[in-house]
Length: 472
Ligand code: FCB
Image (cartoon, rainbow, N blue to C red; front, side, top):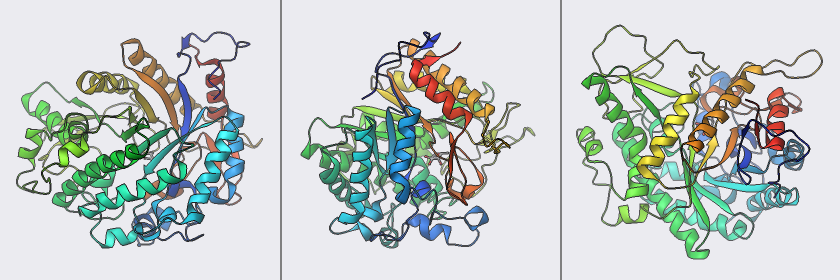
């Protein structure tokens, strides 16, 4: 792997250690297209995006970035940018159509080819088993609120590992299970679009159980496999020091962070979370032995970070609220308010707050470490335009990435064992309910022609990787 820094280049003033892993990330449904090719069956996102009103402009991942057919060129582009690692996800309905039964070898061939292409260019493959594309048949059978889905997931994980375990070193089970559970079954803004707090909590538990079962299945084959999970941990700040606002942080931390961190790293659910949600569920979906299964030793924790959230208790003091509305993605959290501040925002409306990343990494390390951590996603959407000369200048994204990498550096100086960073995203792509209206790529994609153009940020990032760091 290319982990050597270029000796020809001046030493950066903010330098990262040798061996720090520099990469970029994508996800299957967001880039692949080829939605009904070679035996792939629909996922919940195919169904959701075909349901009127669910995705902006009725966009879908049917074609997306056509990566299914442009894989080799895309890997060549990664090599040109000097990426050391590429984080991608496997589409479950491509490799196990319908979510049950034997593997579809044609579907697996795509990922075998991808991994071979990456390795031939010296790029470390980083595989995510689940980035939200649940086979529709499993949703029809109850989806993540149904216990059996966890067992189906472990079986699927074993199939993927049988095919790729000899070549892929880094394995993560879920990407952002909070979104799967609470946007999928709580607020309903993501597939499958269910709005039921009790189901969202059951889904969270079964996602945790599926994680533990998948780790067990893979370790049964290769005991020293590098395994982890990616969480979108919420970096929270109380609006004031009042008891009410601090209680708001406790509640959101419970149903946003500790609902995953505590069972995964400590083998328990937080007592205050069980109390907060008691009116919705008695948690009888947690069966004897489940917590031991979930609490598997891990080799790394992936953290996705975009913004910080300032929360306040229910008393309405007239402060401006952010976009969270009923039905809630935060079951049991009462009438907690999310406040907006006078900070610059990205095209998603998310406030730019790199210090929130420093605080998040440090508190996660203190409370759950030591565990090697990776930033598995960080990036920003801006309304990029192609200039008349064909270039795509994106100074806001460069500033965003620069500030967040400095935040990583600061956290490392304070003792956080951060081992790598993946920019979200390699390519502009299908941004879920926002369709193609939000561009996160360091590489611009023209969706009419599928032409890829590295933006200024891609050239800048390539330089950062070559130098092993940043200018001050
Ligand atoms: C994360 C998702 C990723 C992408 C970014 C912007 O929540 O994991 O797929 O949509 O947000």
